[in-house]
Image (cartoon, rainbow, N blue to C red; front, top):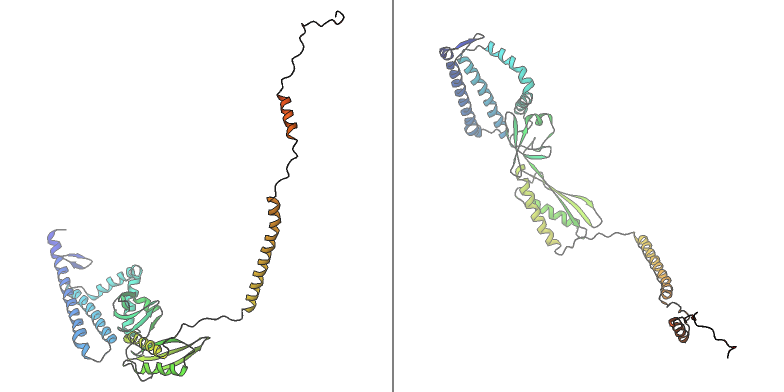
Length: 346
């Protein structure tokens, strides 16, 4: 293949491919993409904010305009290089097999994103709970959705998980938020005063809605405590955390005024007198056993400490006589050479 053929084009299956054709395709496609992004910025920053549409619907319109613009850019670029739609259809059908096997998850997330934009089960700005992740939806993209959690981190969730999984949307029907405060107080306080105090604190907060009015529920009576629950509604779900903190501070202050020296309730267990009596009996029996063993050891210790009987000693004189006799040398035998005396001669 010569340089001339590469520049001016060569035929492949009835389609002329050349450097000039590629340049023309890239130019028209880039022009269409730039126009699409300019249209999205205009819709997002200038036109849609002036309407009464909610942020979720505005995001859906902007995203849908981007999809239409990208498809239009591809169509214009293909038409500029002289490709017919029939041939493009054949190429797309050939690529669909590979896309179905190799890019199945990508296509699934893309289609799920289109469903989210069309059905709008969740919208930008909604507070959702996906598994153990709770946060505010910030953006719905082609493949995934961005959720901003309350610890200022961003979680990327694939769109297919939002369509096929279980998602809890706290603001699906309206934007109001619910504030729940559970309170445990000692039984020494009067229940009516506690109820009036909670209602007064909730009614005095500026962000708490008066329709429906705050409600106080008496949940449980314990052995030494009482459980109450304060339920109130705020206009925006995003301020529910701040309102909860403000109400907790106010309730703590009022409780300190109602009972300044409130002691921590002590837990008393009753009905264990039999167990205590059994333990005392066991301890007394163990003490008696140890005392008997101690008394039994004392005679044995005295016998062990008594001196052993002394052996009968012989008189000192007898012992000395025996020692002298043993020390004396044995008498020498009579000499055989000495003649015996003749008594007859004498």
